[in-house]
Length: 259
Image (cartoon, rainbow, N blue to C red; front, side):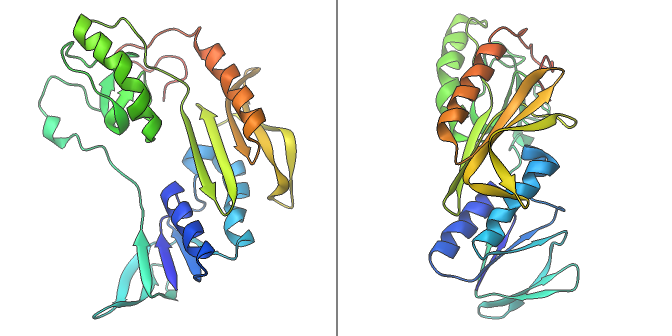
């Protein structure tokens, strides 16, 4: 019996792997629904049904009050009064940029190290890349940031000024319960969701998945696909082409599409 604390991507993928191994799994998520900050309430609710479809329990709106057991864990007490039996507890509740050691330095900090489009900080001789870098107004916790940003960062560092942009359309994917979720773009609250391929039946993805577009003021701001990799890649390229013509973002600025 496995209890996974945290219903984000790490928690969901861990629960998926445990379920595939034949374990009884329950996911505990403190928010009313997992992944709402990433996907928005409407599509987060759709993707949350993947847990139940795989026989995994999902408890929302509750957090952990205490763990039971002495030599080994035997259960999890929740803040809503429920108690879950458990032989294993896995905690995946997110990450916070480790920037405390930079406090008081000339670098600008706000949910990471603030950089311009080229990973250059407020000090021209200092660049930042990866999870800790807030590049062009946004910070993406995905390994693609650490692999794609250094080329531009090093060029700009050697030049002493920003010559090349590292700002790209945010992108991530997650494999859960045999389905692949892919997301690209900068979704904002209030965006309209439109299903352009596949469908959603009874609040859950069709067997062949779906492609959804987030739209605002007549243009696509982000795309989400479940088991639709080829249409997703086309939509992602469209987003990248559109963003290439946007105004650059300076250090500390939000700019178009920034959050």
